[in-house]
Image 1 (cartoon, one colour):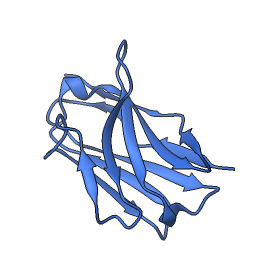
Image 2 (image 1 turned 30 degrees about the vertical axis):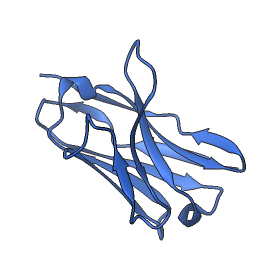
Image 3 (image 1 turned 180 degrees about the vertical axis):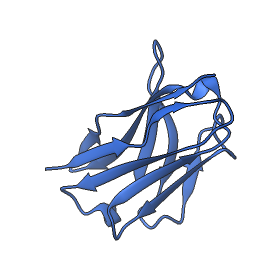
Image 4 (image 1 turned 90 degrees about the vertical axis):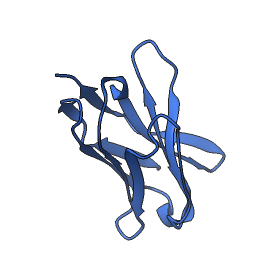
Length: 116
């Protein structure tokens, strides 16, 4: 079955960096676009970044463009999100997501807290 396991979250000071990972299994990872979402307390889940199956095409939310970089390793079935110049408003639970078999699959999420 499809499994997505996020890791790499934590507490970081404003201006700091974190690298999130999402280990995928149970589907042909290299065939599917992948997406990072986030959800802050009291807010709706929002799309952060998406990457095509080949890794060539990437799109970002305006709020993270220029600070975050999405990437993937198809040989390791892993999705990444490099987050630089973090701001307190980036505080959220971050989820990876895939659409396959006519279903959206989500990981359990990893908490990112940006605070001094």
